[in-house]
Image (cartoon, rainbow, N blue to C red; front, side, top):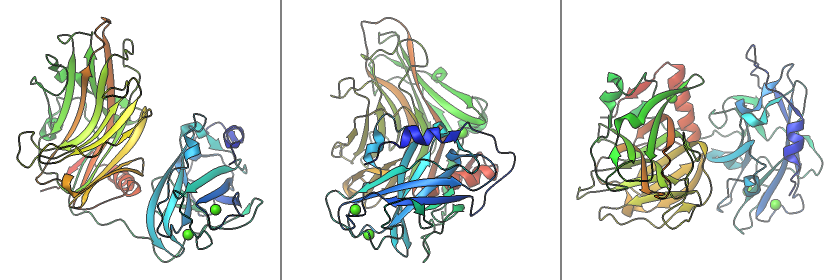
Length: 448
Ligand SMILES: [Ca+2]
Ligand SMILES: [Ca+2]
Ligand SMILES: [Ca+2]
């Protein structure tokens, strides 16, 4: 494993330079590649050293492009994130994966860059990015992989490709040659729900037509707390409008307020549920009190008293709780009609920042993705039986009662999307949202 990428990759980059014109072209980038594991073409790891050269005459922000490595998984299960990138110094990139049907590839891993990666100057080349893909101890054949090569020094390699961020698997080409044979196009969506939360405020009629802000008392959470409409607001981030949910406390139940925004319609059953959401570890104001165990959440559910109850939860606990001490933890949980919970799936690390959540709720079960990575799969016992609501909440499980200083925690939602009876991967969801925005559609509801 090479670990030098971070400092040298960043050193190769200039500051972000705004583009004055579109530079998109199919030869904007050349990928250089060497096989760090050339001696092991039939073991349980792919390890590719990947460099990008900017062939254009202007700096290009790396956050606008992605790199795709194409391979056949030979029946094994690839770990789509290269685990050693999870080290704290690897914050400039993230990895996701997707399925395709192409010559030499039934899968790809996508390398994404965030704003911290900066721009690649005209004519410049990044240091090697060390892409690893592991197969859980199962030996696979790498020589049948489209992107495979056995060179041990960096050389130009067209079979690892560069694309516009958010593009379809072989779309938005910026460098290299994708595999042929046709990748599977995203399924066509017959009915969809979308809200970009572009409202002036939660009093907008267009908002209240689609959503209800809770004000009645009761569970879940701290008994005696209120559910306050004033905890819901609309804010700006750059040119984006976001819906913000807050929860506040002064350590006493009477001084505690929660928030909930639930869809007016109960009409969401099988299909793709997605949202882009910013979980926050730090408070909006006041001290971070670890005795405050609280939940930032996006979920779908039926009325709690329904005989055909179901619920699918993304529940993020920044200060821990539910047996996790003070460790930031994401719980991915489904509930069946008897309110029995799915096997526990918890991710014991911070989710502070923006994430794209994509849930596939189908007759065969519920599959949870975060940023394109499948992280939980619950069986058909937990499939929805009847139509459900969409829901966002902020609520306290328990309070740090010894601290009386007021504090407010929050989460923010960029958009929410649902595709009825169709199952879109994260790239397809992002592409759909991008096309809706490009068509100036702030919200849409064709779900019957
Ligand atoms: Ca290998
Ligand atoms: Ca293979
Ligand atoms: Ca938005």
